[in-house]
Image (cartoon, rainbow, N blue to C red; front, top):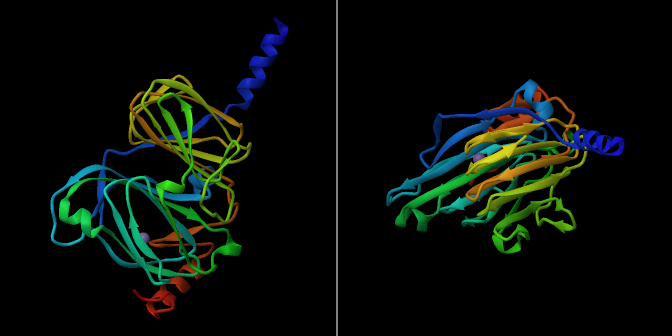
Length: 299
Ligand code: MN
């Protein structure tokens, strides 16, 4: 009996607890192509628990009519971060001043390192615009540590074909987009330790995910339901966990789709303004000035 109780106590201490939950019922337009829920935003209080992640926008499924122009966001800069775009339905086209570009299709991920400065645009693809249809995507911003903020810009196109898929059950699949899941390694190259997975489930099932103690972990529910710590959460909920602990036990519904973000926190001050995320106000002023002087390039 004593032994059993001891086991339970150890188990409980290993579990990462929910620190914050957040949802939004308000969508806003990013340009004319992305109608999003803004579910993660930088703040001094949150940074401790979301770093290295900064911002997350979820464009939940939305029908777009046929258009003779590509909807989206025109030329704009970034510095000090990486922007990661996950296409789930529809197609996103991108061009940047470092020569990167391409179309990402459902299941593909685009990983853009802005580093010292990049100028890009983000649109629905030409083909999607002509056909119309349902569009769904996620955009995540990942911070760069001070020593890599001024790195050269880089573009990684991560097609679904190179993303390893792991079965967690008969009808539940986890994709390793970055980092590791057990022995399986994701294809993305990252500047700090980051694990990114998505999970699509067609069965009701309990699963356990393991993470390194001291890392930050966030779960976005895109569809379906999730049960954690005897609480039920629905789509458009975001769950932010305590750093302590190394395991999360989840129960997913048979229509669940979610994104799991885990990373080693960057313990540095951040100043985020518009498209730039730096360590000080002076560096933000410098970024605006460098952009205006064309130092981040042009399309
Ligand atoms: Mn952008």
